[in-house]
Length: 267
Image 1 (spheres, rainbow, N blue to C red):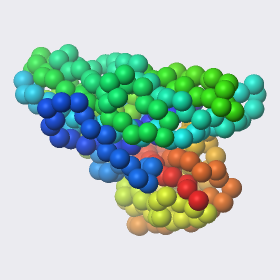
Image 2 (cartoon, rainbow, N blue to C red):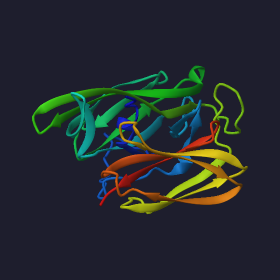
Image 3 (cartoon, rainbow, N blue to C red):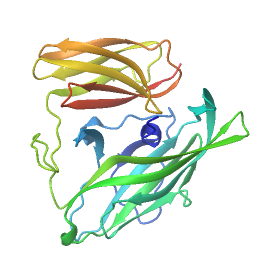
């Protein structure tokens, strides 16, 4: 089972500002905030969040706000069961440019279930390290089934992209650092959070066959349909009555371009 989405769901949004000390979590009273889609794009076929760019030889800082939900569903002895988050631990961040480090609040980088936290990236990067970096967050999700059976899942989250001293190519070119975000744009969902139904809107620049997908927080495909879409602004109705409360991804792809939106179902 593909579990790459597990921690992506609890990394809620990024805020760029300077602090002199440890980062400060932003309380999330509604439990979930959808990131500004202007920071999301496609890199090598994957949806990524483009972090604040780094200017070489200049002090840098950016904050990733974290929200861990109360529970999730896991596979246990061949059954799908509900498990409460004990904590989600950020064990390390790989593929960071030299000169950057990270610190968490709480300082242990272990975020309890139903809690807010944050991760601060900071430092100074030399001109010699100019380039585009696909950060890899190495995470362990520790959960409890029925309040006492421990279950742990290791996850590698690679959905954050960091540019140092360059402007990433967003023209859809074929270079190694090209970001393709061309034919399908302006994906939105109303309302968000969803209850039993909602409307998905998006813009198609050229007629194409589009696959509409809904993916749960463990990466399972829970709904799929194909659409022959003409050019223009389009809307789809979505029935979510049979879906459990939680976080989901709504995705549109034509096999070349893709766009994804995080949504919550909360009744």
